[in-house]
Amino acid sequence: MKPSSFQTTIENQFDYICKRAMKDGRKNYFKHLLTISKQEISFSDIGDYLVNQFSTVDHYATNLQVFTK
Image (cartoon, rainbow, N blue to C red; front, side, top):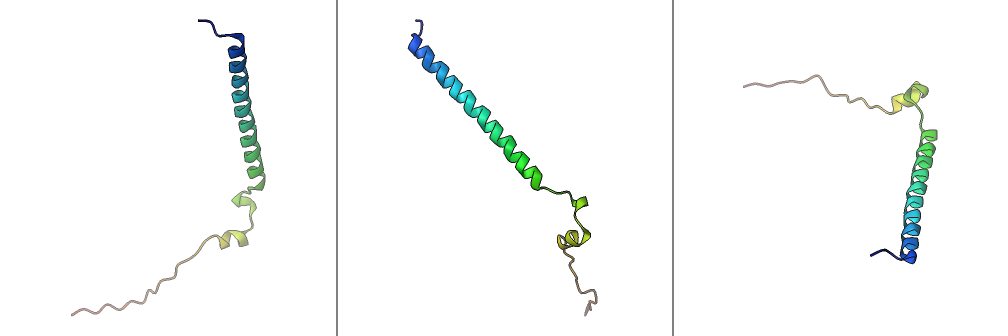
């Protein structure tokens, strides 16, 4: 049975809307990636003062006394 022209029109419109939504979603995703990449900076471009704030150093007591029986 051959679909009516109305049904074919509806299917084509639905197909167009789905493709358009995927295309717009892709555009928004790449726009978001571009926005994020503009805010990023390399560690080599950051000064030593800021890089040193990212790390911590643990200090442990090394003078231990061991008591044996």
